[in-house]
Image (cartoon, rainbow, N blue to C red; front, side, top):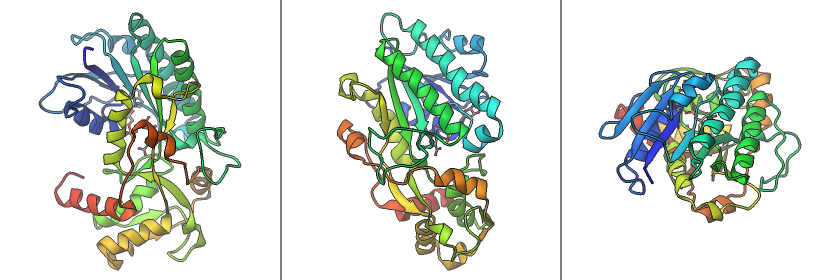
Length: 334
Ligand SMILES: NC(=O)c1ccc[n+]([C@@H]2O[C@H](COP(=O)([O-])OP(=O)(O)OC[C@H]3O[C@@H](n4cnc5c(N)ncnc54)[C@H](O)[C@@H]3O)[C@@H](O)[C@H]2O)c1
């Protein structure tokens, strides 16, 4: 084991958090990081790292990730991507990044891991689901996406599974819940409001919620499947350490553990933690396109398979997450 880890999408939110978590992971001693993104990524302090500004839709730039001074990585985290609304609005770019570049990265990983298949950890999403769904999603629920983002993620999942079945790579596909609360500026994700209705008011700013027309709207009963960034990143690291023979024999897909909350539950948690005045900063203008896409995502999963593999889940629900975010804002982390 060289303990060289490649992270794509390393200038993004979760990529940046993952780089820090890998540095601090006792299971990956003396880790060395290759961090790549179309935006110049920043390496965490105290770790040997190479940062590469690369457009991963270009195969030559993908190959350059395997030719750094750190040598061939033994694990690849494939996090780069165009988020949900971005893929819906720019279909061609979504396909180029979420499918074509993932396949090119898989091929490069395959060719560089001929003797020892390289671990390939792919971040997918619950957006792969759509259509009529059972009340609770289980590992045998068929994924039928209703948006370009979910379709792109599912297509790439099939490649990761097939490349794993053939022994080209040692794949791990983790379908993430919606991760809250995302710091920084509002993103292009259809799910951006799920963080925005907490983040902006906590910072003393107004936020326009695209679901419902007022605090009394029945649309606020829309339920979503959530996880905190802290738990999600722990699970990214756990994904690397699970022995390949523990996965179901026919698929490397795992839906990471999460919990269900409605938009109203989120606003109640905000009120409990920060008060009525802060909730009053949330304004409403219903956006049917946004609501249609988010409503097609399943709000409840059976956590037993991921928990049996050793993945972990949030304790304390939405209130704990809002409290943590409030602390992060106060201390300047968020
Ligand atoms: N955040 C969530 O709630 C969530 C939920 C489900 C799945 N995911 C998945 O997790 C991964 C990370 O999510 P995130 O929230 O950190 O996203 P993010 O948007 O913050 O980061 C994605 C990164 O990909 C980079 N990128 C885009 N096109 C690129 C290209 N052509 N070449 C190189 N880099 C490129 C972007 O510059 C960005 O830094 C993504 O694959 C996303 O689909 C995230």
